[in-house]
Each structure stands twice: as structure tokens, then as C-alpha cells.
Image 1 (cartoon, rainbow, N blue to C red):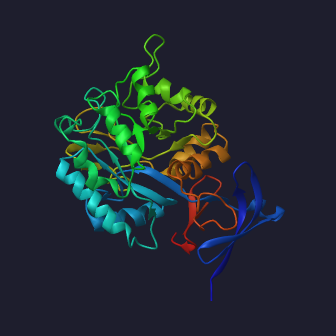
Image 2 (tube, rainbow, N blue to C red):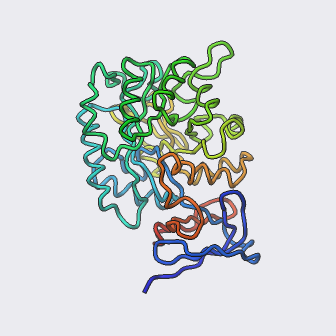
Image 3 (tube, rainbow, N blue to C red):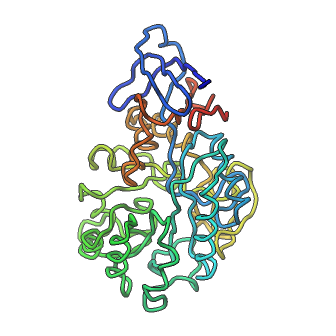
Length: 372
């Protein structure tokens, strides 16, 4: 007999919030029913989707199949019901190994964990000038790595970061786009013209807007300006309060069309475990209370805040709840062309998160299965 469940509360729908009941049978939502009495219940949101996350709960995305399983389960506890495990600039053999491992693991991910939608690779085809925490000796161009060497990566690769101005950058963007990869323009010192050329060549999204890129200058606009003014381009925002000042968040929401901005965690393996040290690729990183830096420096090296915390931060900063939830759920799915989840509607996968009045996770269902 198919399990049936009902969740009552303030339903965060596509364009409004409505008190009601969500009816779930098996792994699907089968009913959305108005119910004024549910106004006293929890917030009920689509499951969060993290397209850029390097690890969580002590588990590194590049650490092998067991680490991916641990990462999946710990992310689910924070309301992340779908994700892209994300590799970083590393020796080429390690990048290929990551792709092979992720592909094999995705065949049978844990049912009680966040579900993989493919994988993401940030680097190594980036700018030395804007490499951030990426190991400089491992930054590459297509002069170093010919395009045919990328063939082992393509199956399952959903997003890859490329700086358009590097030697062969535009050719690489076009090559990846032709194979269905959503190229993310980022870690780039490009001029406005070079950035626009990158999007024209096939770039579809932007790696952590404002971070690791040429910015907003009144005489020399760069990638950030191209990303904000090109309506078709998606942008990532790390809304941890450190990577981008909260005063800029409303500007993103006002500049980008609805659905073209999304939050990502860029979280590291030690996220959720407290202060300590870890390695990201070949870079030694120190995790402090609420941020991560390259050891011995003030250079940010990813975040330690999950998407539930970022939704909370956005709402506290005045972003409407509907917009904050969309940025953490439907918008990243739209980028990937995934249509079976991300909305509280009949027929959708029952990936559902409940939140209390402080926007802290109180329950999670992945494909209808209660996991938290």
C-alpha cells in the first residue's frame, strides 16, 4: 500500500504564500489544498537545491564514494534534497577520477540523502589573477589540456567554470555547451567585452557573483556588470554575509529577471563540524566560526553555511520569502532543465522542507521519505 502523508502549514508557492495542506502519496505530491487553519503551522517549502557544494559534515566531494554518501546524508539534514557534488582545481588525474567516481556513485545514491543531479567542476580553466583559493600551480588552459582530454568528464557533468579570457577559453566554452554542459563564467579577470563574448559562446551562468571576478567599475566594467545586465545569464550568490555584503543582495534581485539568480553554498567538507583545518584540492584551508579562509590569510575559501542558513539570511535582509525560496529551489533546477521537482504542485517529486518561525529546518522529505 502506498504511504500517504499530509503536511499543513504556510505553503511557499511559486508567486505567493498560502495556508494549506500538502498531500503526499509515495514519492509524489498529489494534492495542494487551501486551509486557513494552517496559518499557524510551519513554513512548507520545496526542497533546496545546491548546485555548487564541495562538501559537508566532514565529507569531501572528491573523497570517494563513501564521502559522497556521507555528504548526501548530511546535506539532507539541512533541507538540501538535490545537489551537484563539486570538484575543484586539482591535478588532472584527480579531476578525471572525481568524474568517474561521481558517475558510478550516482547510480545508487542513498534514498535517505540528497539526490545527485550530476556533478560540477570549478576549475582548472580559470584566471591566475582571479583564482582565489585555487592552487596557482594547477590552473590550466586548453593549451595545457587539449579539448579531447575533456571527453572523460562530459557524461554527468552539468556545470563547469571557465574564464573566457584565458587562451582557448571561448573555444572551450563552445565545446562544453555543444555537449550540454551549463558553462559558468567565473574566476575571471575579463573585460566587459570578453565576458559578453563568453556568454555569447555558450556560457549560461556565473560562478559566485562578485567573488573571483572583475567587478563594477565606472570606467572599466567587468564580468559582474555583464552578468547583471544580461537577462539570460543566471548568477550564483553566496549569501553567507561574508562573500557579498547584504546591501548588494537587493540590487541583484532588482537587476536580474525572476528566476535568474540562485543561492549556492560553495560549502567545504568541514562545514557543519565546527572550526578546524581541511584541504580543498591542493589548498590548505582554515575553518573559523562562520567562514573559511586559505590558511594563514584572509582570502575566503568557500563558505560554511548551508542553503537553509542562506534562505534565512536573505529573508532577514528583507528579501521576500517567495524570492528567497525560489533562489534556493526552482531557479537552480530551471538552469539544469529539471522539471520534476522544485515546486509544491501535484505531480512533483515530494522533496519538501518544513521550517519554524526562525526559518530553521524542522523536517525534510526526499522523494516522500522522511529523512529529518
